[in-house]
Length: 389
Image 1 (tube, rainbow, N blue to C red):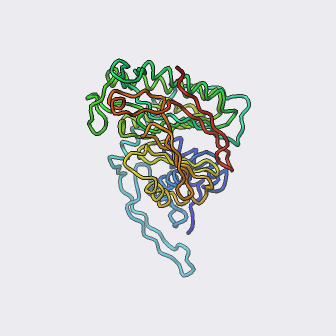
Image 2 (spheres, rainbow, N blue to C red):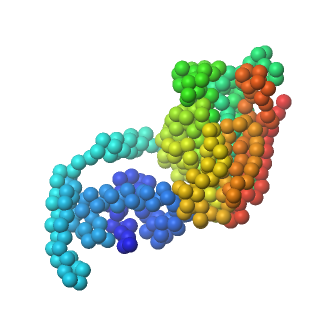
Image 3 (tube, one colour):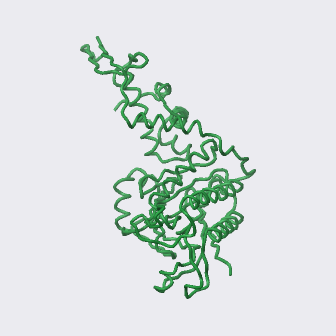
């Protein structure tokens, strides 16, 4: 099937990211090479190109389909009639134009894009570290952190308290210690495996409505979480040339996790060294060289179901990657298992138990791990930090 020359699409791009993708395809000559150069998922890049092709076609431009007559400003192509010669060349072509129509979704997309441009600049670009290795990615695993939870040692069998201040101090300390020990990996991944927030609404409940004990009101919790991620990302930027942030949606914070990523995307929109991976789905994937990473909170799903979903929906990425990993949370302690040719790991948490879990006899080692991956051979090493005291 003929493909459109990406150079003819540039004028139809509607955002900086679309322009960046097209320029990468032009420079590297293929979608696969462009995705690798940008460090993004090939499937996402393909969707971006297709989206711009649609914009161009609506204006009557699709040279690979013999459409070369662009409509006037403010008009779209309503109908195109083409007469062909015996040799297959175009003899005549009529392009019927109509005033441009925009769906509600398109108008909202344009409005949001404009808002993003107005809000750009909160975080200025930071200087990159002097020396890094392109061959490595270090992924920092934030287990279920339950930010905003209130746990009082006087009401539990253990002696561990938990509130927003403790949650902040412990996570900053663990991230700082890991960053000082993972080496000079060019890329750093900040992975929140879900349930970063304890409550999902001002009713102080989980997403499904289960009441939980909270430290303060939800608005303040969200604001302090944003500041905390700001500190973590800035710390990682001192160690890594690029930082990729993934916020998995958990059963406690299905909506709050999505809001957090949206706000971080706005905050760092002018920092080219920070990528916030979209989390509109509970399934998130990220391909880095010969490594495919899949992220899910791990609630209400078996490893075998995840594997089937990945093979079905990420067939290109699966075929292109020799090393396949699925990172999960939910159970608050570390487990590892291999199913087929995919490695599954549930990551432990730094969090203290709340009263319900303590009364029910639950508990696990409190720790945070960073895993270093090589671009070709996969996992290279790992560092684990335990809660002191």
